Image 1 (cartoon, rainbow, N blue to C red):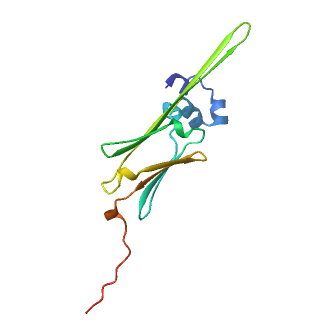
Image 2 (image 1 turned 180 degrees about the vertical axis):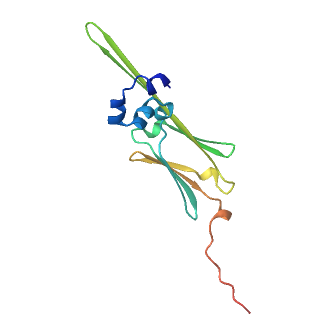
Image 3 (image 1 turned 60 degrees about the horizontal axis):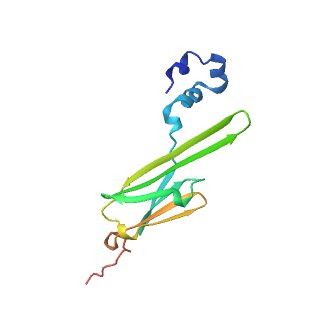
Length: 142
């Protein structure tokens, strides 16, 4: 975080044009650490976690379960080098995230599956048979 740049050296005209909140967010460390959006859905048979991750290949994801916690993570490293007669320019970039979800006792760990399509990772977490919703049963009165 660069606290000096927040208030002293940013001209007020800049703040008025771009907005104080946007300038401050640019220098805030939280703005740099972006997490992908996640949707969690539950139906009668399973939980589904959808992770919006465009540009990330399925081979770059790591999904693991440890102590009843499901973790989804990725780490990418990109390097680019350009050589010219008088200079060498080298750029590198790192990106990564980890999201963890506490799983209820009602899920079947052995049947968890993941699918990646069109920039969305979907992790399907089926419920154990005894935890699935049962249709209502009518009881006859004798």
